[in-house]
Amino acid sequence: MSMPTPSNHRLPQPPPVPPRKTPEAVPPPPLSETTSVIERLKAARPKTPVPSDDRDATSTTATVAAPSDAPVTAPTPSSPPAGGTSDSGPTGRPGQERPGQERQDQGADATPSKTREEELKAARAEKLRTASSAASAWAAQSGKRTAQWTASASRSAAANVRSWPLDVVRRILVTVVVLGSLAGTAWAAGLFGGTEIWTVDLFRPDLSLLSPHRYALAIWALIGLGLVGYVVHQWLPGESNSPRHRRLGWVVMAAVLLNFGLALMISAGLYLESLILHGVLLVLLLFSLRWLNRWPAATSTEGSLVDVPLGLFLGWTGFTALSHCAAVLSLNGFSWLWDDDFRWALVGLGIVVVIGSVVCSTDRGRIAVALAVVWGIGWIVVERIIGQPQSLLIAGTAALAAFLLLITSGSRRHRVDHSYRRALRRRQTANLPPLNLDDEDDDDDFYDEYPGRFGRPDDRR
Image 1 (cartoon, rainbow, N blue to C red):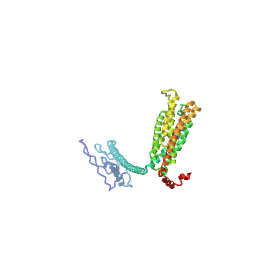
Image 2: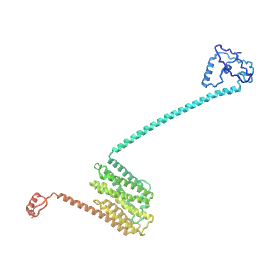
Image 3: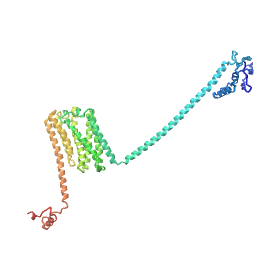
Image 4: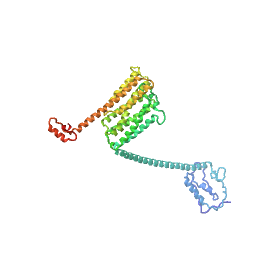
């Protein structure tokens, strides 16, 4: 059976084959009409590489052009041409290609596929580069906008803060720092759990002759309450622009922060470092006394809420500087000039009396400073009488030092009050006319002008 060839189908002519260099090269005979369509297509296919898209299109066109109802006829073998140059293979069977031609066809098919994969990879890489560039540009633009917004917000916030009155900022800072430092000091002292500060070696009553009883630390409750009162007083309407609070607020903030650091060092066992910090705190509180004396309290309320708490703070810091120094020297076994602790205790009490008297003699008499020092000295007297080591002589000397401080501050207050009363009396009598005892007429006029205050000599008889 043979497959009829449609009349309207025209097969492409085979490409011209270049002549071989062999002298006996004979061109292949023309294809017979009985050759199958597949063999004709193979013969008509060019040997040059064709892109995969064009090859697919050609195959599709050839498939569509063949009639679907045409009977399939097996190919009829034809006689091999002379020289064995036909499309059949070495075995002479039709449709079998030569090995060289098969490798050439595979190379032609593989080259377009490889090119297509490279094009896809290049396209994907280009898309990734495009997306990365777009993301980078968006991130840069977003970062620039965020930076601009942050800068503008910072400028507006700074402008708003600068627009606040300085006194308001100071009062806010004083409130936050003082209350926070008091809470931190209470935490470091062990009031909220942990190691209690009065149980450390530095506060042992038997460490030196100048170590007070541990109950002396109870004064901190009164000092803390007074500092809270100071914070409340600075918020009163009449104290918003007070020059006293303007200078005093920064010193109080630094003092409470140093006291908090002192409590932390003592809790950590850094006794020598805490002694140095204790000295800095004492100098700072003495500096605050300058502002208290330069701007005296205008009312009794201000004196109770400002002068009294800071005076107690200063007096207790001065006394603990003495006991702290004696305890550190005892812990380190320091001995200089004398090996007798009694003499060192007398020297320390003498220094406290001299410096305390000078401080208590300022302004109207700093009775709060004297009371804080006397509180600490009183617990030294109690400990040296009922505790160990006992020393009645040190107890008596400490009691004398406390008495001298109270007398000094009290006498200063008495002198200032007496001077104030004399000045007030002079001011009241400044407008009265002078008395002339030689002229009786003038005396009569004087008694007539002030009949209710002074009586005539004749009437008094």
